[in-house]
Length: 62
Image 1 (tube, helix red, strand yellow):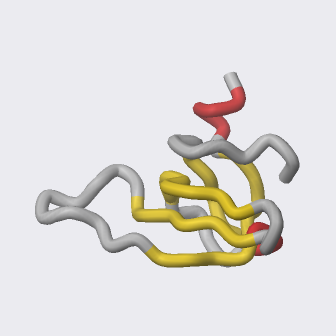
Image 2: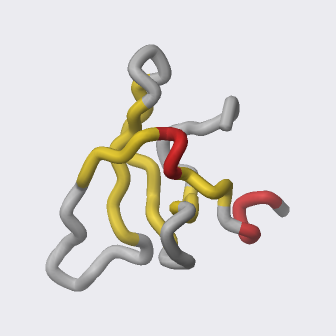
């Protein structure tokens, strides 16, 4: 996952839910994501390993 950028929509290997990338730390192979689309009261941000990312969402690859 070499071209991961803030704002990208991704899927994790554990499911089909979409997440938006909030920040990327390539040195430590970590990124911060939140559910996409945003929930009405906001979506909490959490940290995941870049290895947990299945790939960019199909809509982002067009």
